Length: 177
Length: 224
Image (cartoon, rainbow over all chains, first blue to last red; front, top):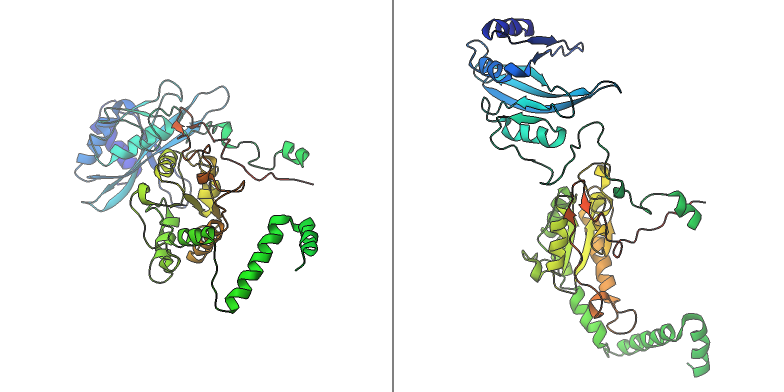
């Protein structure tokens, strides 16, 4: 099935579900499907249980930070790569977007649909700050408890004390010499 | 050698240096006649430097090279360091072999604190000495020498076993040169000097404190 056919199947299968094909212009032509997050869980179940697709395996979950322009908030994106081991097809790339990058960062967790998404959604939560509703154990995975930043966001700035004086060829070191 | 000649030497090298040279000359002369002389200090350091027991501890790919160094091909046992102890209480040397993440750094400092004196540190590889290729990352400590005193730094990514053996021999030379008395005696023989160092805590944005200024002495970069 092509991306357009999957889109049509989703729209007829789930009433009210908005789907958009995001065309990949590169030679790989790996088009992806944007699914509105309100119907995300339903759409995931539909794709998994679809007779022809049978996308029974979620191999990869990652995040993307679409940092907006100065007047726009931008949004965060979760990207799922789905395969069918039964039908030997894939990947089908599914994306969901948050409302903005500040307070509306919730997306439905797809861990109840594909168990393999559990740790990867935790990683996306840790590094991008997307909150997955319905995740069984949403804690930070790589950084420690108590860390407040999301380091893979594009506006993340590492703590300044990391580059302490004397660490590099600082101007005051040149004067001291 | 006449006494006034000795005094002339003393102007250049200091009394101690001249005396040492005299003694070394005497030792050499006696050894030619089959007489072995030594000092308690030399004997003590000779014993210490040939039985440095490292801690079974590795962090990343450098640890693989460290393990290779201990195996039959490179055989670190030739230097008396074949016994890797699984407990810091029984170890003399911690080889920080690999990337120290900020999440791991407190545990590394704690392991060092649990080792009994005299204890030594080899920082192995680019990551352990400076953060290496991950220096600009958010999760990597920019050198373990920010929290514990490092005796030998080895650059390389990863350093070959030969480099680790070279560092080990450098450490042996350092141990052999330590005097047990006097102003230049090492840290573990000074009553007031610390043998434990503060363990950094995980803060909201990074490690707190970001470094221990009493330990961290970076070389000043001087630009013309």
